[in-house]
Amino acid sequence: MIAAQANQCLNYYRGEKRVFHQDAPKWLIEHSEISSQKILDNISPSDALPGAIIAARTRQEPNYYFHWIRDAALVMESIVGRRSLTSDPAEIKVIDKKISEYVEFSKRVQSLPTPAGLGEPKVNVDGTVFAEPWGRPQNDSPALRAVSLLKISKIFKKKNLLNSMIKTDLDYVADQWRKPSFDLWEEVEGYHFYTLMVQRKALTDGAEWAKSIGDTASEKKYREQKYEIEKTLLQDFWNKDGDYIPTTSFRTGGMGSKHSNLDIAVVLALLHGSTGDGVFKYTDPKFLKTLESIEARFKNLYAINNRNDLHGVAIGRYPEDVFAGHDFSGGNPWVLATLAMAEAYYHVARELKSERNSNWQNYMAKGDTFVHRVERHANPDGSLSEQMHRDSGFMTSVSDLTWSHSAVLTATKARGQLQSR
Ligand code: NOJ
Ligand code: NOJ
Image 1 (spheres, rainbow, N blue to C red):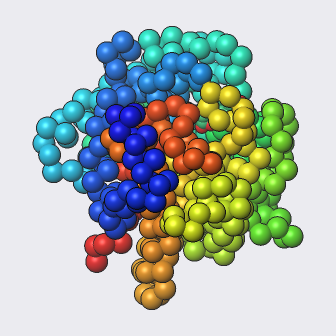
Image 2: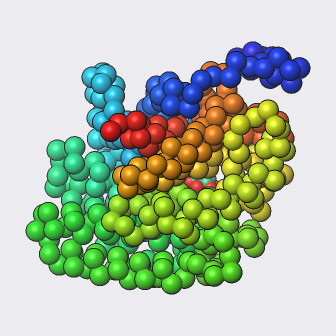
């Protein structure tokens, strides 16, 4: 496969263009079949405890053979979404089994004596504590786990088990959100738009859930804290001289130099933290400006973005990034970041369409350009790594990052919503 791939690329550079696929929705739908399979393969691999979700199969430089709480929760959400779209009963059966295993594994993780308690970012796949130095706590993790469990509770029978797990995470979020924590990239300690947005979502959905089970004390507590988070988000995350939402409002520690404060994390924050209640809409001018700023900045950053024959802009995590997976030789565009731009524009289009604004199709088309970019660099066998090399476009860093495949599923779902009336 590697030889075939190299050949294809050589042909490409010789000018014999690789058959450039098709329209974006077609590619997404086709790729979803592969992505779903890849995701299911990475849940409960044979040498792990059932329910462990590996971030990727790569075990060296870097070792991604761990269950990251964040990745696992996002993967679960994407697979629950896929469950509602697929008509294959065999696939649904496998998905249900993996969901149930994830719940059991997460139950175990919640009670582990980890260094950062419920804010622990990752555990070993045999369900034991990972105790080496790491950026911790990462307080987006329990919030995302709660959101995934809340989704699962709509389709899963073991209500008592789920309810106690959900409450454990939500109480932690409500009690801890005022403390600084490491960001989703595991580098910067402080207060982050992404973390606060997903904490707000967990408490918003959690208050509804508490109400539904008659737990009025928790409902009140979650609602109060959600409003407090909202105030912080509105006050601290707009620089009137800037033209984008800053990713971190106040830094307390950690590594790296991120002087621009421009980060795809802000886009992921809406994708993972939107509550559909009108607060932080995709069509909010601040958010639209953020999308534009991100595209403009990354366009000039990577060589592969300056070839006229390629569509769409490849997007990285943040401009100052140097993490190349195996080393720190310079940041690259990421599959999940580029697809996040597509998905966000699909949501912009969805909001405009519901307001009967005829501009929506332009935003949908804009989203498609980012899908074309990923399509161009995807391996011919459908595998998707974490990153795309900034100069060659080849897939690089860990192969088949589970989260990359989840990004295909969620972008497909968002694109599909535009198709229906
Ligand atoms: C591993 C983290 O997962 C990654 O996000 C980070 O950039 C590097 N460590 C550098 O700290
Ligand atoms: C590095 C990323 O920065 C982080 O967000 C992710 O959780 C881990 N890799 C595992 O995929």
